[in-house]
Length: 112
Length: 111
Figure 1 (cartoon, one colour):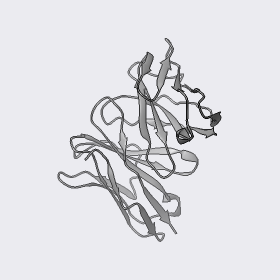
Figure 2 (cartoon, rainbow over the protein chains, first blue to last red; figure 1 turned 45 degrees about the vertical axis):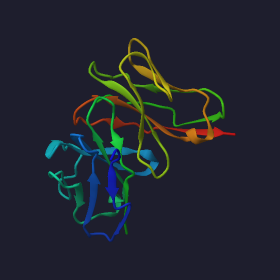
Figure 3 (cartoon, rainbow over the protein chains, first blue to last red; figure 1 turned 90 degrees about the vertical axis):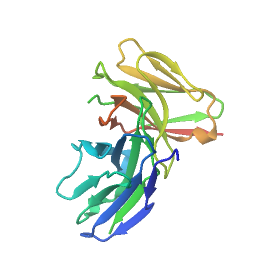
């Protein structure tokens, strides 16, 4: 289909628990991106993939965040030992050509 | 990466033309300028992209002066449904290169 599918829509975790988010990019798109949106509309780039290979991971807090894009599976973003400041909406986007990204609807993570 | 500066918010009335200007003084030679629209509880949606001069599509126009240090998104005859946050981004147009989002401009269209 022509949409980026993100699951779940909402996720609530206690501090210290693990959170795993999923993203199915548009078929045929080679690039996948993860962004974190916190208060006041601020977006933070986390990581990008070219197919199953990490392209740019300069935004990832590596000690607790990890991500994968494996063939024939949704991409995933995993947060080990969540903290309160991880509460945000996490957006996945995919891209193929010169015309920008297509974003999913996001996963709202609430850490309590 | 080029940083962008936009007005925090703008108000308009239905039927008016709205122009949102974005400053990007440090734009690089290879960078494109892209605008996205975001509604509450949704992901950003691509509106328009350009490199220089003027680009027009069915929803908007993008004006880029010769020095490319700024750009203006023009929305003709806005309606209530155009109330959203508009983001100006500067970066590579292809590949997995990260693109930096600014704070966005919250446009509120009144009846």
